[in-house]
Image (cartoon, rainbow, N blue to C red; front, side, top):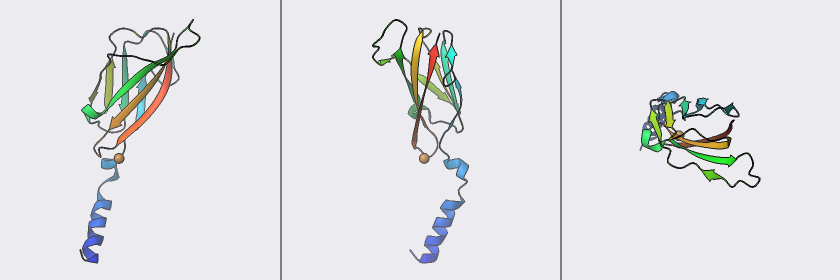
Length: 124
Ligand SMILES: [Cu+2]
């Protein structure tokens, strides 16, 4: 490739609007990070970018519950996140019991890069 062609190719890549390649950022969450909620029956995470549905999801782990001193991390099984547009929604099969939870999300937008994040919340 001649240098001018290479330069043109680099400029073409640089000219792609950066928003098209932006990584998804978590902009809103229910339950919110570090919040305490009552009997949640669903979880909703909204991101800054449209999500690729099959590649985006969450893991939820119960990290503590009242009256149990040595609570091992307990994955909440049977939950499936559905991505639609910028929002990832999880319908919980039953309200979460009282305790604290660690939610770890992974999100993939148009550039196919997996981005992860995590936060905790409590159920009263
Ligand atoms: Cu990326």
